[in-house]
Structure formats: C-alpha cells, structure tokens
Image (cartoon, rainbow, N blue to C red):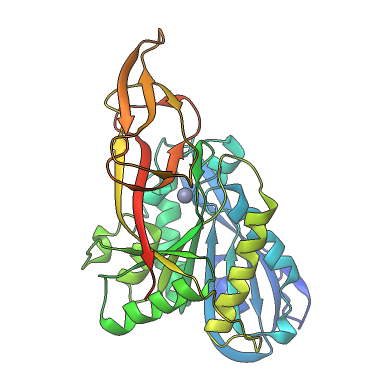
Length: 344
Ligand SMILES: [Zn+2]
C-alpha cells in the first residue's frame, strides 16, 4: 500500500515505510509512522511518532514497549508525543511507542507470544530470523543510526515490583567521551537513583540488550526503569514525561533549564537470588525496603505448596526488585538486593 507522505509544518501525517523515518527528520512537523515487520507467516507493526522542530539539532530516540507489559513507559511515550510542540524544538525526537506489539497485545511478560523470545535479549537482532529477532534488527540497523542519543525505557514487568525508579548507563562500554555523555544523560533524567552498569562489550554483535547495542554503535544511551506490576501508575508516567523533557534540555533541544535533584545516589553491588526450580513464589517484602543479609525475603513452593527454597537477602541493602506474582520458572530472578551510596 502506498501512502502519500505530506510534509507540512505542524501537520500530522501517516506513513509506513522505514524510509519515511529519515524524511520526517528533514522538515518541521509531527509524523505518525507505522512500520511493518514481516517474518515467515507472521507480521507485526511498530508505531512511531517523529517530531521535528523548527531549528536544527540532535535526534533523540525514545524506545518504549520492548517489553509489552511494561505500561508506564508506553503510556508516557504516547503522552509525551501528543504534547511535544515542534515549534519549541531544536532537532528531532523519534518515539517508538510499542516496540513489541505482539507482547503488548498478547499481554505477555518477558517474551513475545509470536516466537517465545525476549526481545531485550536479542540485540543486535537478525533480519532473517523470527519476528522478535527482526524487530531487534530493524531497531539496530534502521533506527539507531538516525539517533544521537537513546533512551531505552522500561519498568518492572507485569509480574515485577521495582523500587526505586532508576536510570542506568554503560560505564565500561565505549571511549571516555561516550561514557561521559551517557552518564550525563542518566543523571540529567532526574531520577534519584542511577546504576553504572559494569558489563563490558566491544562488538555490537555481542550486545544482547537494546541499550548496549546503541552504545556499542557509539551512540550515548541510557536505560530507564519506572513503574511495574502491570499497572499504569500515574506518578511513574509523570516522572518519565518529565525525564524526557529533562533529556531534551540536556541535549540542547529545548530552551528550558532544569536543575538536577541534589540528592542523587549510585546503586551498586546488585545481587540477585534465582529460583532453583519451577514453582510458586511467596514474596514477604516489597521493593524499596531495606533488608539485612540473611533476612528471609520469600520462598518457593512446589505445586502442592511445600516449601522447596528460601530466598534470603544476599547482602545488606535495598530490595530493588522482586517478583510480585507467584509463577516462577527455574533460573528466574526472585529478588535483587543492592547497595546505594551518595553520588559524591
Ligand atoms: Zn523491560
């Protein structure tokens, strides 16, 4: 199907080809673009809004919905796209509202119902692979190269309780300038807690995660985590929308100035406890609580309700993530405990 691509300042238009993404960066306006991704006997679409400002500037990519049951990022991206005014913008914002539409519409956590794969474990993707692998490939090969900075926005998944909300950057991928720019974005987003990821990576072929694929390509990128448990928490949506605005300010794309929070903290020494078998998880603590080493955080039972594993805090610290729903598979993370310290 051919859709005429009209580029009039301030006019919303619809298009469906990846080449339209590039064209939308050339002229002021707000564009709704839906890109079709086809695999063998399967297809999906990726809904994208591009807002191009009246003056030149960088291109920011906001990536939401890599996990389909992470609702706060998806709704924040839609709210932000509606409100963003091209007249006040220098450069362009590409907003991928729902990268993983099969998982969103299928209401699955972690994986896509199309192929049983976790999109955020497949980067850089495969243009000849399954539907999820092709979505990852589209993002890596066609969308990342258009961006000067990337926000990969997540929450706790539909079965995950996550507190506090945080941003993360790759502290050991790329040269010093790339790390500095990613770090600046992570703090500028405005959340109180920031995680410097310690993973190392030299080749995009080994990326795994979307954010790491972006930095492996030399593009400053951060991960953002706000919301969770399959609910739309208005406070999380608002924090994300403000973070998007703060990111535009950090990149010099709007004239508004924001002062960073003065009490930002570093999260470090993250340790997880995984389930040794399939079963039912009974959680005893909420995310965000301080716990002490050895403290019982929950337990796993077999199908008959007999306790088969006790999950105890691996160290003193903050319980920053826990499974909030009972079903658990062998090897899945039950809890994550981490330490925090002042930024300075
Ligand atoms: Zn996620």
